[in-house]
Length: 460
Image 1 (cartoon, helix red, strand yellow):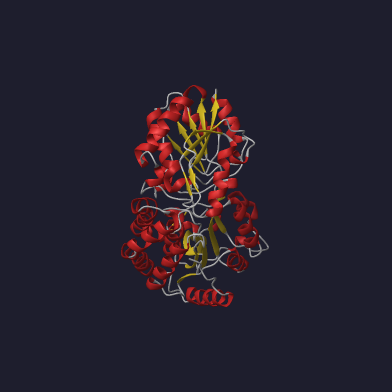
Image 2 (tube, rainbow, N blue to C red):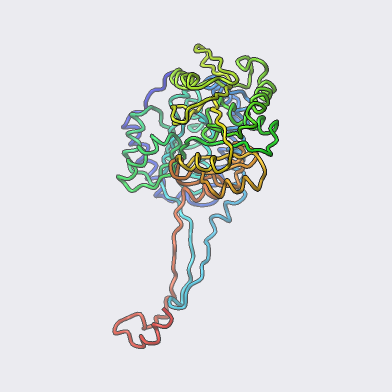
């Protein structure tokens, strides 16, 4: 399926219509926001079958995985916003210093306005609609741009959004890089972008022309550390799950493994057992094992297989865009597989002798989106204290993204800004400081010629 680019004139018309709609103030009342959130929630139920079918067409993603990693996360986010929206919208009272009395101080959350949300292809439903929940909750309008690499999903999302929202409020535009260029060249009130660090730089550069605030959810090479004292069976099972879900095409998937030298062989055996338990002897026949999104992605990840010794897996099928879950040993840290985000089911395995080596290796590289540690909790806390990452798990992988009560986001090279729960509401809001001075009392000490300044100075 090939998507047709949305014409530039159409994009301009949509943006102008949404700008006019926002200025009416219609999107601001709490009742309106709640109605729109419930409408989106109902649509996820009504369109569940079509969304799951589209995810299967584009990514070979099973219905169970689609619900687990895409639809359920959006529904959880909606429930969280409906539960807390009133409290988040309530003005926050702040104390007023004596020098400004008589007055009251408060902070009000106001919508930023027109939002542009650009999603990637790996979780094309969740990563488009989860930010939309925040935009609706904050009272914004939104233009949504799905990825052209998952065209079946993009078409279904376009039809669903058109059915439940007026285009002057929320609309979908389609296309590739040329459309992205047009979108980023326009002035928006906020841009929410999920993608690679390279494209994040492009977005940030374009947004700088208009001083537009950006939320950039990027990626990077997320390390996974397995130390002495770890339960290897559980560690292997959770790492295999985090690395093979969506065939490794997950921004927070473990990107490389650092394992204590004495544990490597035992871990390889446990990892192989975990993969067989999930997907059988031949994962290609598993109904729950996804495929690479396109031929280009397949070729890129398949090329990594020659950059080390295959410890497990390694099978490929070009026609099906299939790459088996693979452990890769004897890897040169300078090789491309250790320099580029893999975004596939290949996991390089490196060994260490001391945790100082681990810290040195991790901190010598860009700050990752996630960091995973398996081993004694005290040792894990020490690793966390000496490193930096967008998020982290001790004795688990990927699960941090499923907690909608915690913010999700990167740091440094892996992104900026956070969302999920209240942070989603705040990502699309401006916290406006308001000072209300008494209207009938006007103390003279602030005005020239500054009489009594000797006493006034003491309270400044």
